[in-house]
Image (cartoon, rainbow, N blue to C red; front, side, top):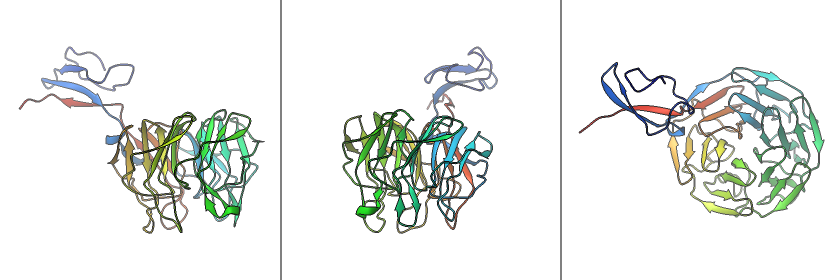
Length: 329
């Protein structure tokens, strides 16, 4: 961005201009406006491949600084990979092999909790990542799997829903992490597992998941205000085993399984009021990991697609701004 006195406008960024501004582009003799970009006009593109093809893993971080944690192929894994926006690199393993666990945080400060350790097995184990190594800390109140995402940071996280193998049932239980201990707080309105979760410990959302036997896809969506869950506008496509990124007022979800159909490539954007379908992924996929700490306009999805465990990665990106020519009619 140069000025509004005849120079072409290029490379807008949030510290250079504001949505709603108008300028004159003398190169073509037109007035133009600066408009919001955002998830509704985002597009998907291929990213770098994982070193270990897998599914059922969880994720942490952002599109250009991500972690893929654990997973399954053909057994539960303790492998962790780090992404720099171009390529994945294997880093220090977790102490516990796990798939379908919860994970959140950043590339240098992440939390992994719960998960499936093998046929019929689940763990309550929690581990923290400090950028160099994983450390075992205090456990969840109960062993749970079928989660895929937690919410928040290594000092303020939320673990909602999942499956408790011993009880053979999905749970609505929510646990809050203060950096040292997990504490049970108010339950969700709907027991569910394999849902998408975004936000922070005091302002979160959980969408979709499975709510019945054997794997009944849900479109239900709930929001957390730090104290209790409230039902909100349903997503357009009922699904589970899908990915998401963003915050409570601006989130994107993608992929997943729409039982009894195969995985979907559908992507939806939440603006705080309603869900809107946007551009599809290049490949229909479920069971992959995403970047819960990222924005709704920069989502990374890695891992399993229909027909087997995959190493493929896709990146969803939307510009901060879009430029429109002023017209009259």
